[in-house]
Length: 468
Image (cartoon, rainbow, N blue to C red; front, top):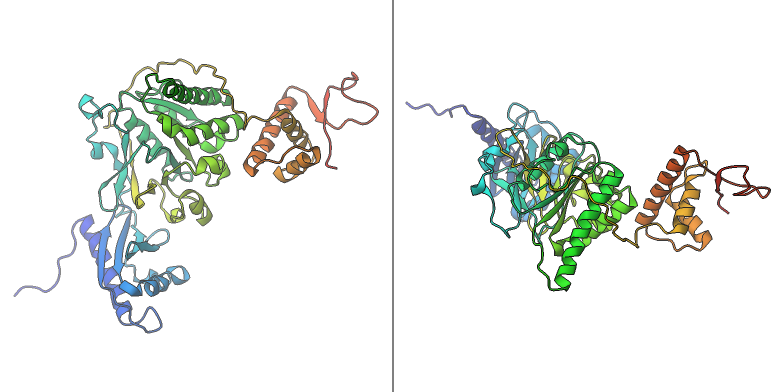
């Protein structure tokens, strides 16, 4: 006589599927018997289990009762859902609508989670001539693996011209950036500019990857020069089109690690804005990474809105998710590469970012430029005017720190048109930088009484002032 007992699961995948099935059965029983919403039954017509790498998920189809079901299981931080989960889970469950279904995602414990996906296993670890894409094709790369085990990719194209990678420390931001650069090196016809504003080991390791056109830009002067070169390339392409000259169609990608540090410099922020707003037409693109989840950290709304595609990793809170993950609950993501791939015209995908391992061969070369040439790119709308700089310097010299609100009052008092909040914040920062540099060389900025003044030989000072 055959035993009616089911054989215990033997593999990790079987264990995951068994646990998810038990969760789905528990939810179905409590919903059917009216134990979730005021003793009113909620029929679950279909339940699909997804034994993902880092999280397990089930999709519940409840038809017209979906609103009551999702309200029930999310109430009081998922208080009704948590006791039904048959494993110890880190973090918080994520419950949201996914098409017509309710998706419930819960993290696996360490013994069931797969925290590393090697790039070489997805792409067969080769970067030989047979693996090089054809000329004229949009550059593509593998971001990682979805919950279903499928490869998740991205592209640099008109549809996805600029990419933003956001995540707090330890979220996997550097992993994603390193993997991206390594895969771009597969292309023979590509230009890559590397900007490292935080001293990143990842960027330094990629400094000889094929396609990297010059040295890694690290200090403010080097960053301005590198970005000026990229802007000049973009402008030259526009000029070629206007003059019916041959157009350089090679993709040019500017990769920036720690965008927030770069945009503190008004000149660099202005250059980035030009690339963000005009680069797509010239096949010039940005891939920016940052751990700071604010509009100001992205260089202002004008730059932020042009990051149409994003890799959102773990961020600190819900407000950060709203800004950088476009409303996806990135604050509930795990660390170490757990993220969302967000596209401009496609559904988002939860993804485990692939790591660049030793088995993936990265083509290398000697960068053509030993140094970035000085290139004066005129940016009249962003470069501080003399009157703006003077009053921002006066503001920076005050004993009590002044922000953009008080600087705006100074401009109004002096008859200077008050600009946008982003420009005011940039001028506050710029005035402080100039004041700090003057102090470093021994020049002070202070108020001068009526009995003395600049040029009287008594003091080496610049005139300061107070608000009227």
